[in-house]
Figure 1 (cartoon, rainbow, N blue to C red):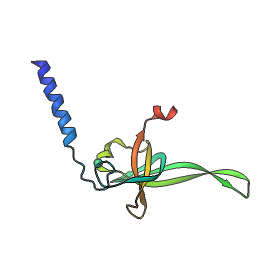
Figure 2 (cartoon, protein in one colour):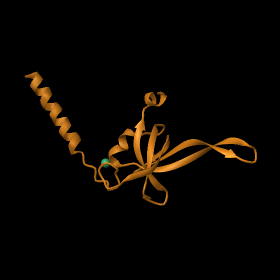
Figure 3 (spheres, rainbow, N blue to C red):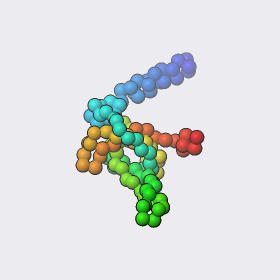
Figure 4 (cartoon, helix red, strand yellow):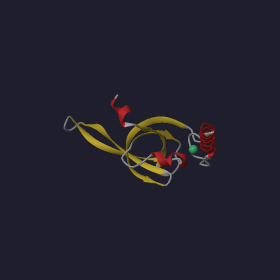
Length: 120
Ligand SMILES: [Zn+2]
């Protein structure tokens, strides 16, 4: 009897996962948003409703001094409702270019990079 009960509960959980609806039009998975263009990875520095900001370092060559300088680039990216819970400040994530969604947002959240995967 006990075994049957656990099986039933598992089934229920799976159904609930499927039933979680994402009504976000600008969700790359469930909506109409198409991702194309450049991909960047960076650390999440701020998280708001439907939006994250990531930052990463770049090397820029300065001709006058014939040397490289470090600069930081900040990108705002769309964060769909269905992925909101898995992203937190300080996480390493990958974003991909999409059509401009607003004045500052023209990227969308693609995936989270686990620290273990990054080392490889
Ligand atoms: Zn979604």
